[in-house]
Image (cartoon, rainbow, N blue to C red; front, side, top):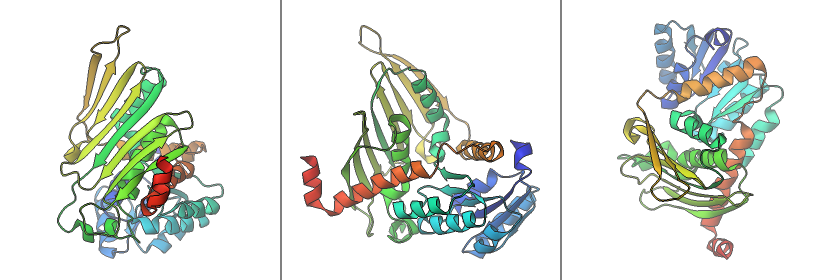
Length: 342
């Protein structure tokens, strides 16, 4: 997509860790403008891009999204700022890639939907573009597992000293582990089982960190066709962990690791024989650098160039957010939780 991206101007709003990853995917663009509430972050990112031959500058976020030279705005801020900045960009006629979870509530996502006219909006669920997930989805489409019965996912990290004082632990800016890593698992469950989920049960709890948001969340989700997703996200997972299993009537897929501190990304396929017994096992290890961010951006550029609706958009984000809201409601109402259990 190098020739296509060369015609586009990008604004990166939010120049922290994720913003830097997003900026790396638009090297080759006609223009990149960087903005951050910390002007130093924006300046440093623009300088890094200029060293790579990109015409880049930095300014305030409102000037960036209103700049007539900008075609696409990437919003990679704290959760509370995602929706207001996405809405402002859409009102200026820009296409938008907004990071998950696209806001702090379904009302935030509704606001983006109301601001959208003819522009394209993609929500940044980059986990869908990891090689093990991509191969697993292809195998499911090819009926390698038979009928899908359930998925099981675990995702978590162990935090660090002072983690409870960071923005993710702030109810207004972050919202907790369920909203942060939890939406990734919910989205992957929806990818394989279908959104929205018909029944939602679970709890969001604060078990360790001294903060006013959850650090663990436990979910059981049931699809409209009776398939089950059993999910757990945690910031007390002292060894960083990613595990996602897909169970079918004829086999199982197990995805482990995301690279880096999560370990080598691996896909294991257990193919059941007609006579049952031990399955035939095939393992793929993916040692390459994480290309999910680039693959996701390349697809969004194609969406824009070929005028096609992104396949991971606001409706998928809203479906995940509604699960988050239901889990939080159950967690604050023990009576409703027990009644739901029957």
